Amino acid sequence: MRIVSTALRTAPLAFGLEQASAVEQALAARARAGDSNAFRMIFERHAPAVRRFLYDLLRSDDAADEGTQETFVRAHRRLSSLRGDEKLRPWLFGIARHVFHETLRARRPRPLAVNDPPPFRRQRPCSWVTRRIASWQTPCHI
Image 1 (cartoon, rainbow, N blue to C red):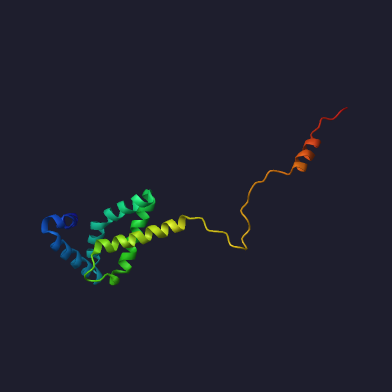
Image 2 (image 1 turned 90 degrees about the horizontal axis):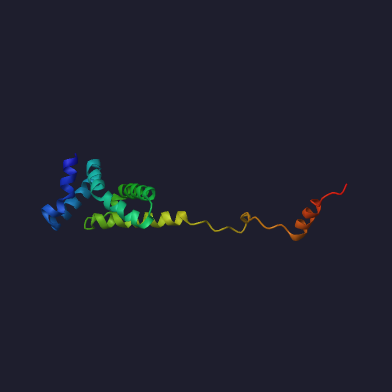
């Protein structure tokens, strides 16, 4: 299996750009038809580039790995939306870009709603409280 995926990974160098595009379209068509090996080849060819793209944006190995996984899960679900003349790689990077934006959105703090309690803030005690406590700590005279 590894030899096939390595040969396909170097397809643009061996066949030229037009033949590589034909290979991509054939893989996409086979994956759309339900061929799991074709989708595995798509994953093996494009996952490293998608992961690098997401790592450059997210700056986290874990987030880049999760984003790559989410990108290919969505791509597998939405293979039917890939048009025949559309190139696979830009389509995958578009999905990865959406995953990136959703990850950023999830990281942002949620604004408080009107009915939410205010966040806990430790406030300095009032001056009369401070004076009262200080008065309790005065030394006793025997």
